[in-house]
Length: 225
Image (cartoon, rainbow, N blue to C red; front, side, top):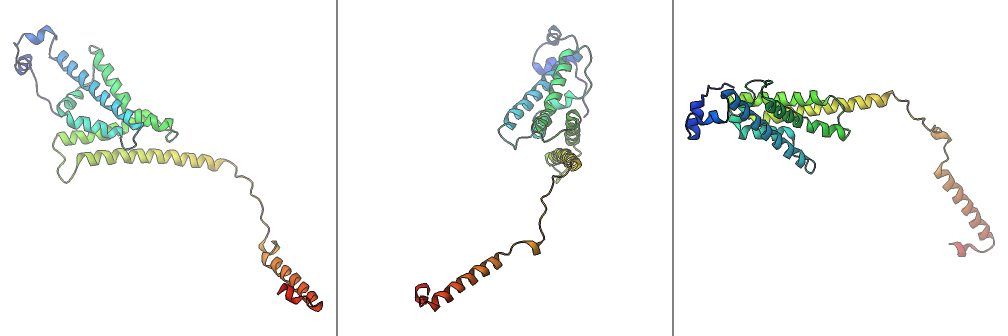
């Protein structure tokens, strides 16, 4: 994502103030850039926090979607956010970047708290972050052309990594269960040794037939007919 050099004079002209006004609040262009980036990272973190709050009540909200949608709606700010790493001079920027990075792992922490994921949360979050950021860079640089849709690619990549990671956890759980001794099975008798319900019914029928014959001999057949 290429950026163009911006001077204090350009900033003053854009704000409609004198060229000396920005110097009253900022030492130089780097300090202004750091302030803009700090605000952008804070806004991204707020958007991710809002997605986390909705995630507790609705399963269709995903952190990857919130990240992608915010970047698409704030393209210029997103470009500036990643043009260079923070320095010791700009502690506020470093704190804002750390907070934003923490929100990107919130979804994985939720899965872990639910017992649906037991892997490395930071690693999983960075994998999803890398995939989404890569697609955004391609989109902003004009490298993605129809029918390719940036949002579709990004969400499929995030969902694929989530599915693979949770599937690995489930497989590990199954393997762990397989190592445990199997419960003692109750032995079953061979079919030939099991009592026959049909045979019992036949004996009951035979017993009744004997009663009928005895009663018939005594002249009581009509009573059972």
